[in-house]
Length: 493
Image 1: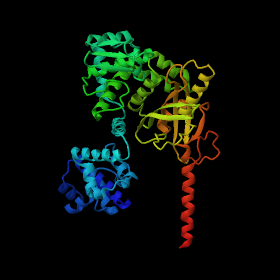
Image 2 (image 1 turned 60 degrees about the horizontal axis):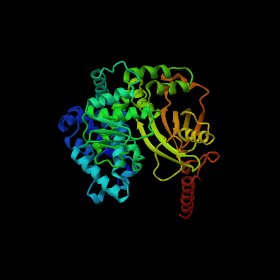
Image 3 (image 1 turned 60 degrees about the vertical axis):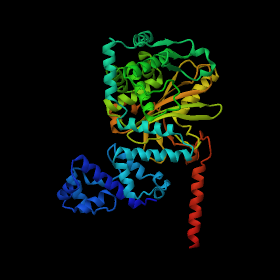
Image 4 (image 1 turned 30 degrees about the horizontal axis):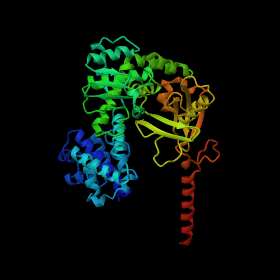
């Protein structure tokens, strides 16, 4: 078990080591510049010793950072995940001593060579098997971390899209027509078949399949033109980027490797960027977000202008907002649900800059029904039930998280999962409300936007007067019981 003091020493040592390496300093050079002994610097970096304030000041000055950075829990994007892990409950859930790992060895494992990190990830995968966790879960988490590390903006993919548009004379064309995309794919020697797959009942849940043998992209029936355009553009991404380690269907539930999942992400990113070119889309977003009042119609008009689905537009926002508007604290999530069955699940999530609320919960707890994501699904279900549903609905809400200072502007778009069926899905982008957001998006101050206090799950929520509550606050109740037990035991001493 790693104690709190050990965690503090490990984190401090990790920062010093990382900064020393970034500055190109050897142990001896850092020791000489800081006026410390070589062995003392080594003990700091390996988490054996934590220096006094006067020595921390000297180290900070030598390494070119401030005192607060060295002693805080914040760090660079490359180090932050490691620090979060060292400072998490998970670190003590693993019996490190049974793996022959002392805290100093653990720090070495995290911060040194890639093969050791790979070995550590392999260990996690073995542990996950004992708890019936799939490797895909780890791959997805790793992919989300990869996206976060790059602010979900990938310049090499944006450049590839620009080269593609120039090569195929598409520079000024928005929106791109399906027939044009299909003809380009055919020029690459790949056929598109929209009939055969739809006749095979066993493939109903798949949207597409690529056959390497026949070089054919099969598209299923019932797809909208926007969905077809994305799938064709995604295949163009696979081909143009020469991504061979890839999935061949759209479900992709069993990735053989992390590279397979990563390449699928790259091709999908390429597709969305191709359909919503960076420069043009950024100009459109600037026009919308600088409005003084919330205007739902302008957002829906955007999906029509580019002939894309709401999810594609929301995903593109997670690329553009951090890069071009400096809005980095955001989350994206997709939820499926059924109001009649009181069933709601998070099927996709992305967090940039930090782990935001809301987030996925694997404990089968009930997500807060005050989330705009769930409220939108309920509204779609009600409209569908009363035969009044006509088109996707878009809603906005300012969500204030209970007992925190966090407030998010949440924009959600919802529609039926499949046309004619009661299950609905919503995609939501949440933006942390800070001075940067208030300056960039004046409409956040629109008094017409509803403000609601929310939580993560009902089981962990102390809002006892909540009318939307879907389950008892069992976690809160258990915590209160434990507190009473502890108080009573102290009376026995």
